[in-house]
Image (cartoon, rainbow, N blue to C red; front, top):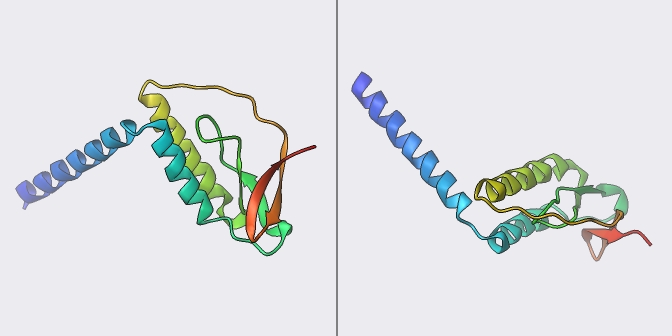
Length: 114
């Protein structure tokens, strides 16, 4: 019984380490695509009042319009992807314009302020 649990623990540890290593090997373009898919699934709207600005950061962009109930998940996803990007020895920096969100064509959209 103890041997079985030890083997299960070791296998689970190997799987987690492999997944982490694979995540570090993603290119910045792959991270941006993954982030954008994640945001797209959480940005439908019928009114601007449903939208907030969330996530963002280099290399993911300056923020994304999402439904307010998804902001925490989007922020966590952005943090995870940026952390993996930086752990891979990469870094970037840029300035973002001031933005607000609007519901445009049924999608929460980040819009630069005039």
